[in-house]
Length: 290
Image 1 (spheres, rainbow, N blue to C red):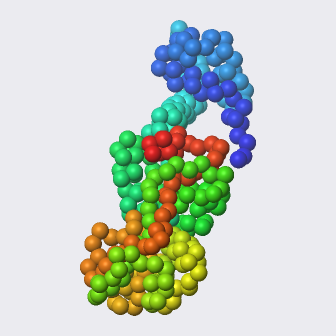
Image 2: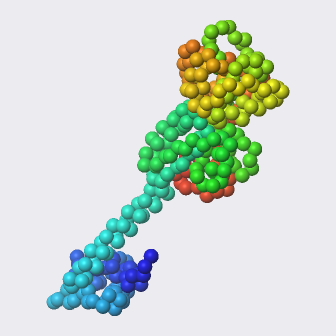
Image 3: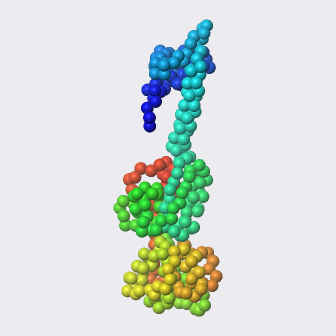
């Protein structure tokens, strides 16, 4: 930023000029600004010295502005407006009425099931706060929080002491299969490993792989997809079976059967933030609402 001659001029001089123009009196301007009359006189003297122009003149018993003074008075009025706007913005932030919240989401279960009701409640209370949702792979959530890319994140519970976590929901994995035969009431890893498998590339993938690994079996992966709609479409087409989060599953799934797993594969979904990290009033309000 380049130096400007007005940078060293007392700001009180610019604030006083519009009042002098209105009242014709330095004394009245001083009263309005809650400062002494000599303080304004000194500030105007400094202004005239820095600019090299005369900004006031006495006509009769009143102080009037010169043409140069009128131009600087306009600058003073604009400064007052900007100052008031800035003050209102700061107060709005303090009262959580403005600002922004950046939310990370691990995928469909968070973005379609958990976030909408939370955001609806929050935006009703704070309609002027901007909210941005960013879908991030579950394994990258912690780094996104630490890098400051998001303020909070809906993710799976993590064994990470650097994160403060607030429980949101209990979820579990379920299998989806073509509804063309009678399936067992529960399916084991060995049951599913005997079938062509469609692997999710979404946030549930690590837990799905862990579920198979703990049983000592390897799924027969024929296809991979990230979107829930794509996974289920492949199953509907008879290309295999899949495992997804129950929260991410659609409410209706024509042509498909949803079957619980044995053993169960639970997962806890939390709202996380970086522990000890200063947060804005808007983010604090979202966190406290949970």
